[in-house]
Image (cartoon, rainbow, N blue to C red; front, top):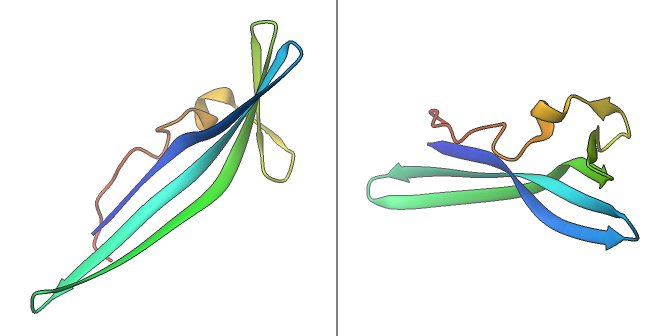
Length: 82
């Protein structure tokens, strides 16, 4: 099984701007004969910059992306076979 989501990590305020880092967190687990194995990852994927009521989103390569894509929960929790 696997679950993943995009969640806010850190918000930094500088003057009239806010910078928020969004990370993709995922957990995968497997049960074999009563033994459970877990792996988890956390990777920054987007940066939100809010200033004067205007919010822009960027990926980790610096390319601007649609704001709806970078909202927390965009990769809503999902379950899939490993």
